[in-house]
Image 1: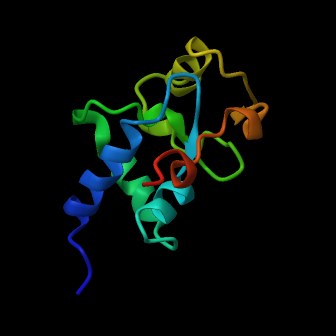
Image 2: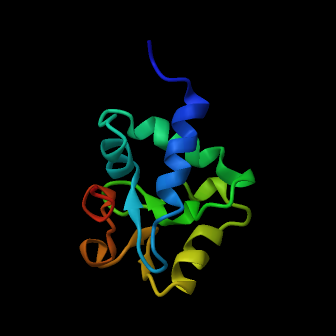
Length: 111
């Protein structure tokens, strides 16, 4: 039986809460860390529902560094502004130097 989405969402929020300032990760990296490699879209749904949680959802982007979730933030460029306030450069909705600022929970949170 599949895990209930809210339980999965809570696990996602636990990972997202650990993304360091000035770094980003991807929906897929979080899904892989949680043992659900094909559930990147479900991680995205969790981020869409994270506005009542105290998590840095702006630090989660797609696998190419694109700000695909930006329309879920208040204002037109809030996600970009939050990332830029952390020193992350964004051009045309894409994180620049993505490999340098990418935070991989599969490495950083390894037991």
